[in-house]
Image 1 (cartoon, rainbow, N blue to C red):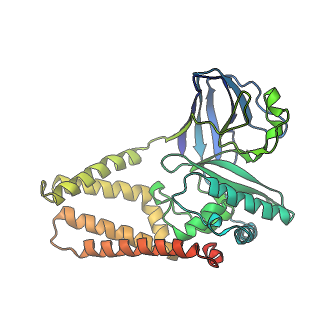
Image 2: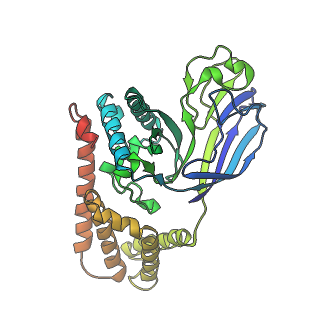
Image 3: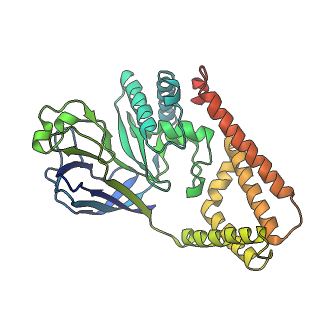
Length: 368
């Protein structure tokens, strides 16, 4: 996948500001090119803070960092490394308070993923392994802050994502819209490639670049990918930052967007009695189904073959069966009724599992 990655920051008009930024670099699963900075960094890094750039911004100014990002899946099929990573996660989850250990697909802050990654790294280090947390963003619509782990093994570094490892066990179709259906175990030694890594976390605040910021600094700081240091104040998360990751469109993805809009417009007009089945509505749905199959077909097939994802795949198949009967004008409600029942069942099952997992004594089950 290729993305146009752009970070913008608007400095408040009433005071100057110092901005710390983790500038993206080449690494496993990502390649950076055409990096552009609107301001020159005062100092690119300090001891222990590789990748951190410091910018002195005047009040009311606008800062921008842009680059081209090429991503790919990073991982390994090393079963021994996967088994060890799974044991780290299991032990970390057992030692965490109930809700913190259970991923929620609706959590877009990234803090739960960070807490879980820190706990897994601590467990790995307790057993004598070198490990550290990596922070970045997932690309699912609006970029979502995320954190995972880098584990050092005899065969080299392995990337373990505890949050998605647990989540995919409960929501196998989490990535289907992106044409992916990774299994949970794949997150024990890799990732899917729809992300950017900014760098390690946390960083020692006492060793940040830019001179006086390192004097008397205490504690640790997580940059995601930014943090600010207003004059005379402690480090705070900036309110003016904005990150955008725009995928490079392909012919198939563009066709899917057009035909999807036409197909759902046809469905609405037929339901309101303003259009007749067949004709242009059938053409719109046909284009939608073909472009969707081209993008998601392999992922759907893999989801169907995975027993844990079969209900989600069956629900999708029923949805298209119901859609097709409407645009064809077939006088039957069987596919529509079946889809509605399966949809309700899947929603209730997902809700009940999430509710039960949060009850005392059920955390081990929630860890899978």
